[in-house]
Picture 1: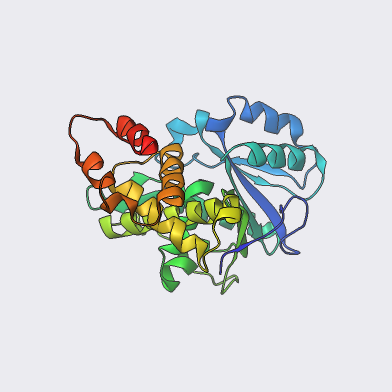
Picture 2: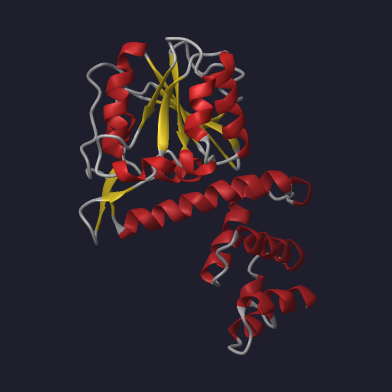
Length: 277
């Protein structure tokens, strides 16, 4: 079960060994920063795309760190993950499992779709980790977690955590391309992504959401906004504000429905006109 937690850099999730995956696309000097921060033999830094079909992308690719508590490496990783969607935190039973985790994560880099048997997926992207995990069945989840005992990431809801339901040395291993991103799964992931955003908006607007299930109310508004073509977060928040003023389902009532049906206005202009009603 996914739950909210304090920062794993402040309060350890588990007594195990902490690892961090950091995405190089968020810091052009990531490799140099990591080399400077590594202070003692217990810390390790491995380019995750090396020895994979994506090795040519490693210049802006992810690094897997064996990152015990304390020290400059931990401080750097914490600072980067607090300010950017740059990766996630994972825990292992012991440092001897790090090589197994590296092999496992390299397998997870490749997924299949209906269009291609092999494509790269940044599985460590924190905004999409929760939607991805929520779309997995029990077997897929165990294969996704592999040797990891616990996984933590930071999204719009703050720091989130998932424990491996069956950790251990005999954990299932995901084969390259073994996870299939079907159109149905991608749609499910989009829905779960909206649910994460709904949870955050429900927190931000809780003072004006007196209904018994505020998250469900917000989720309905975000679904309606997406169906109307509003895919950007700022646009969806403006749609939510309209619903707070005009009521649930405003988009289906006159005059809002007629305005939304107009073909002479762009999506942005329609929002402006809706806000003027």
